Amino acid sequence: GILDFQERGFKTSVGPVFNKSFSEVNCMQCGQCINVCPVGALCEKEEIHEVIQALNDPTKHVVVQTAPAVRASLSEEFGNPIGTRVTGKMVASLRRIGFDRVYDTNYAADLTIMEEGTEFLHRVAEKGTLPMITSCSPGWVRYLEFEYPDLIPHLSTCKSPHMMFGAILKSYYAKTKGIDPKDVVVVSIMPCIAKKSEKVREENKVNGLQDVDHVLTTRELGRLIKIYGIDFNNLPDEDYDHDMFGEYSGAGVIFGVTGGVMEAALRTVAVKLTGEELTDVNFYGVRGVEGVKEATLNLAGMEVKVAVAHSMSLAKPLLDEIRAGTSPYAFIEIMGCPGGCINGGGQSIVNASVRNALGVNFMKLRAKTLYDEDISMPHRQSHKNTQIQALYDNFLHEPCGHRSHELLHTHYTQKPRFK
Image (tube, rainbow, N blue to C red):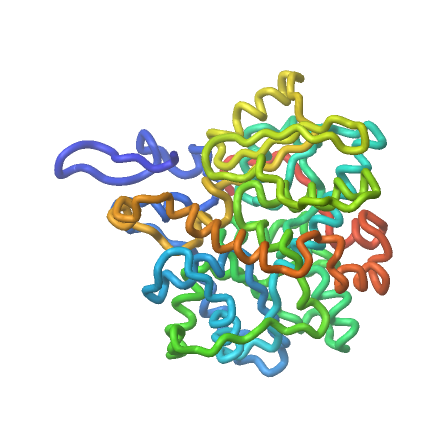
């Protein structure tokens, strides 16, 4: 890891290894150092004040979206057991804070699968660069840009779900509602510190505008709710706004756990390749928070090997194989944080005493929250989302088409270690 104890005895301090500065170490800006800092001295760069300013500005239309992993952790900020799902109370609190629209990033996760799945199929058909690697974890993307820049062509060009949603909100949504895109303020509630740097990447801007204006972590949302004096645990459950983007599938929900992006993609890619519906949409081989997961699938007579890794220590051997030209895989999912987004650097902190008292991996408890929601959904495949279908019919026209590439895709370049 980045952090370590320096010196001994009364001179002991916590900092980057060998007393180096962050500019000299492999900082991914993932925020895991905050989760494990033994003295609790680290925190994210807060954007609560900026969000409150936007909410108080009558000229701004402020839209909030929440990532799937947030619902699996926010309850802990209010004293509830790990793994308690509080989606309805979270939505209710956001409305009381004053957001003009409250949407679920799961909708955009379905959109991401349509784009990413199509991109993978194009690469296979056109003998493009394989294996293709997922790009929705910005900490992982940053790591690749400074440690493995020669592998950039393997990255999917898809933006992450919340960035895609921001692009749609400032284009299709703004036009439909008759709002100037400059007056649409997009706030993302994320489990991830790296999303804060992702939103300001020049490569992601459309017509000079950021897709997303502010990112709050799960912890920041907890503080924001308390600032407004909201009795969170006694709120009635409310649902997301459904006017244009309220529908989502179970595939979108499981984006928040390691293996979820791969499983969501396979649920759609398998159908597109074979032209036949799946009798079972569960891909258990890519699930789990222990180690690298591998699976071999037979799709339309083609053998497809896939792999899933979370944390850079697990991803590095896969990347070294690609660099050496010996990788057997066609598709790889990589998440920067152990366990995926459910254990992101912006999630509620679980201290060591609680972890030890649980007797079970807390990441599994959070993951169960998302898998349970997936099972309960009427549709569990992204391509069955009727509002996504309408978005393509009315605006985007086709996955990976011209408009999609303008709004939903990006590019990558070699980066210095710290900027």
